[in-house]
Amino acid sequence: MIQKIRGGVTAPKGFTANGLYSGIKKSKKKDLALIYSERKCSAAGVFTTNKVKASCVVINAGKIQKGTAQAIIANSGNANCMTGKSGFGDSKKILATAAKSLKIPEKEILIASTGVIGKPLPIKNISSAIPLLAKNLSRAGGKNAAQAILTTDHKIKEIAAEIQVGGRNVRIGAIAKGAGMIHPVMAHATMLCFVTTDAVINSQVLQKTVNESVEDTFNMITIDGDTSTNDMVLVLANGMAGNKKIVAGSKDFHLFEKTLKEIFVNLAKLMVKDAEGATKFVEVGVTGAKNKHDARKTARSVASSNLLKCALYGSDPNWGRIAASVGYSGADVDPWKMRIYLGSELVLQNGGPLKKDISILNRVFAKKEIKIRVDLGQGKENATAYTCDFSPEYVKINSAYRT
Image 1 (cartoon, one colour):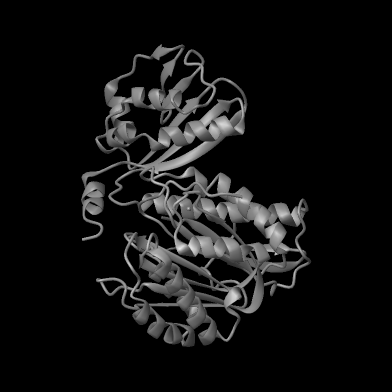
Image 2: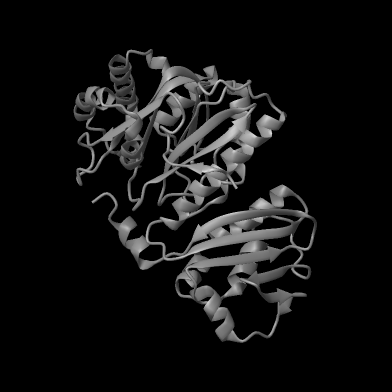
């Protein structure tokens, strides 16, 4: 387990943040966030593989190639996606205004947006708010930033941890948002995650840790099966911990990566538990797969089944829907070798059901946290996916999201 400490993105040395209302949200809740490092950072990022990408994703994907950044500015309530050339122009105006306010080059600022697709940003309001946003950056502002990136989320999602690297204390902090339109498929996610660290690590090694950490964490959650146009994870490392540089393959590298994975798992679970309309948190474990790819595909296929998610809401232990989703997962599956467990109860083996008292299975699915396990009986690889149920509240939220 990681050693958690208080805070989020401002827990590491040299980072400040802020969040405020800039005029995007009708609710007048905070909708503009800024994270800033007093030193230029090594930078890494992963982004949605959706071919329809928001301007912020396109801009960041180009910027991240140079491997440095010093700030992240993000708005919520508007995705600034599919808004034509003017949408790209608005992103550039935000970056230019932020650069002027922070007195750093525009190329060192990354940008993110989340919210409704196809709606222009109120760019004049945002531009007017940025100088005040930058002026009031502080160590205490991390929570404001965490609030300002939320959309339909009910709770902020932040975490920080401390590890020892070469006798030096190294901190990693993160904030995230995500409650709907979540089925991340991010390459080497709408969910956003911003990570800060004071570790000394170059951008190539940092990128390697991010790529590895995303695969078994954010890329293994699903709320509704929709891959967003704006998903991204951004990581900044300013080196102010003064540790010996972390190099790929070293003991320090593995410790850093392990910690980053645990942070991502914690945030991923928080997203699923805070999903739109969710009443239950579900962990789908797959064991006995021939390879890691099959294990991941199977776990995510089960977790993505809309029929299963409806059964979960209704506390109906319909394991047939699990078996069906395993079968269409694309993994190497032999139904005669497969076993399915609801909680600790084995319900399927040798191609058929076991006699079980239905009241026992009903109690398993009536719980707020449910574990499902599928043993493919084909090998030694495993994977875990995280999901939730579908409730009428989810439909209600998404039937009137724009209005």
